[in-house]
Image (tube, rainbow, N blue to C red):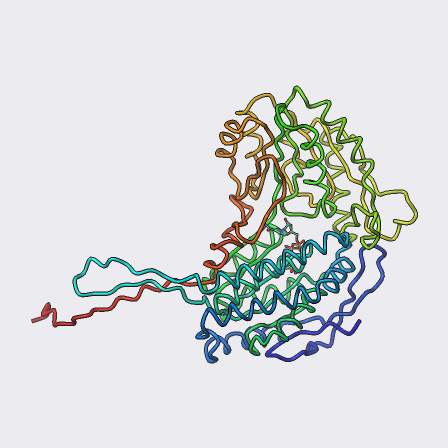
Length: 490
Ligand code: NAD
């Protein structure tokens, strides 16, 4: 694979540092690519390009209709190359090819959605209280946007940010996670091919505490959209105060999956597995905290334990594989640390809790799907985001109790309620402090609906109409249609 380069002002360039980073396949630790490691100088050049392009080129004055057409073109290019993109995503993240293929379909849809929305984001006319005046509110691009991505959904998270940023007429400096740059480099090629003018979109690869930090600190950046861990998010928020740049933060979750005894239990068991073990549990909205009503608790747990043993771990390219490896040695070590914490806290390890013994999986960062039973709200494994294949189970006896338990973390990203009693579902849902609540389902998200968190799961929303509005500033324009002297100062 050719060296993965930076893309600044319409040129593919090496870093001024000449440093490289090896990109690893988490299934076997083989080096799959070499990436140019951006440094401070590179990212400053990219930001300056984005600044000058925003301030001096005609990009921000293009019509929303024109920008929408560009986005439709990018969507078509993604569809044309979706097989290659999906393969790159699996190679770099270890997730199954079928998951990557589904991601690519969603990604094209995200570009189409914002393409369609681009010219429907108009302002409004205000009924002015002042005679002989005309007052309107318009939406304008926010300016230079810095977009920082995590490694779990490298291209999907990129699409959630790039599409609305371009639709609104901003310029972009994008930074993928340093360990998963491959699909972001590929989509940069597609953006170039689509005819987005040079300087509008820039890509810098490299470390978070170097490239990302400069983006957060830079006085030339107007808006920073970040998806990642809570501590990094807090750090970015602090850095952003330098020039009071606007921020959007999509952070972690510790999402409750609430199962009442009167739900469709077979479906709830099946989906509880999906909720937590999808992509080896490395999903911000993973249903990692299962809350089960006491009268079905033991049966439910037994079913889960039985089913979990059948999850087939393996190479993401193998069509029999149901779950790939974790992303890195460091992420697996984090999970191992939490499993030890769980044991010490007195939770009951029901299954998993170690690496698989299969020699074919030895080189990958695999960890067995794990369940802790008899968990209580005060445990760290219940409170903190583990971001791996670990499920904690608590039991509850009343609606009030489960609402309190579900809300009892610093997070508020997503959650689910399982019951056939729709009034109860609505009552509980209305009390949950989360950005998304699913009733009798887990995980659906789509471009049309907003995504984001309450509490420390973040600030702002991606996707939906709000996802575009986040990338705009509002301007009130007041016009006096019959100017006359006021004669205040005689
Ligand atoms: P992370 O915070 O370690 O890194 C995210 C990005 O921030 C990376 O690109 C990294 O290089 C960069 N970064 C690191 N230090 C930085 C700094 N000082 N300044 C600026 N940027 C810096 O997160 P991760 O491990 O890549 O991703 C996992 C986390 O992402 C989990 O907590 C997960 O819940 C969260 N996530 C949230 C959502 C959501 O929609 N809410 C979606 C996906 C992932």
